[in-house]
Image 1 (tube, rainbow, N blue to C red):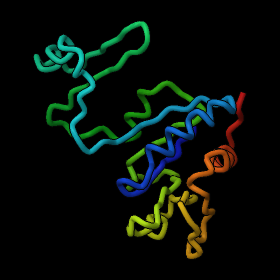
Image 2: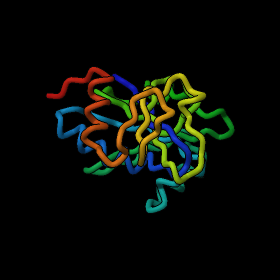
Image 3: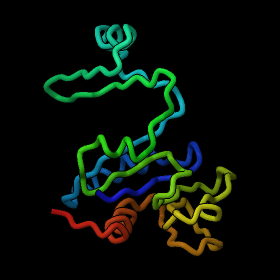
Image 4: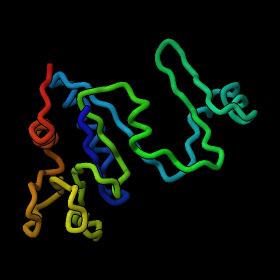
Amino acid sequence: MRILGIAGWKGSGKTTLIVRLIPELIGRGLAASTVKHIHHNIAIDKADEDARALRKAGAAEVIVFSEKRWALMHELRGTPEPSLEELVSRMTPVDLLLVEGFKRYAHDKLEVHRRASGKPLLCGQDPHVVAVASDGPLPQVKLPVLDLNDVPAIADFIVSYCQLRGA
């Protein structure tokens, strides 16, 4: 399973890009999954009072499922967050795993950068950034710079860089 990070500052459009990339990659016959690090509390059991009650009662893990999907909730209860490697080991293998967040991890990354944000580029400090998707030219960047709005071109880069083959 190939792993590619989608990194950038908050508000740069990482999730938006991933949401647009996934159908493009699937359309090329590839299976893709995502891991997203969130900096706030996750409450996926809001609508299910029973699952919430079981979790709050102290269950270490709760699986909820229906005919359409299932989710595993694992309570950390003061233990450290799992590493990216631990999370990946729990996932079903796919052609490509897009990782949002974990920008300090040592995996290859596509940086998402918006010039208007005023934030510095990550690629100047992170040797694991392999390309930058931007909303404009970045002549100072020595890596491939991709048009943030050209999703097929970004998918072309990812497929080539990760040496993926669709069905």
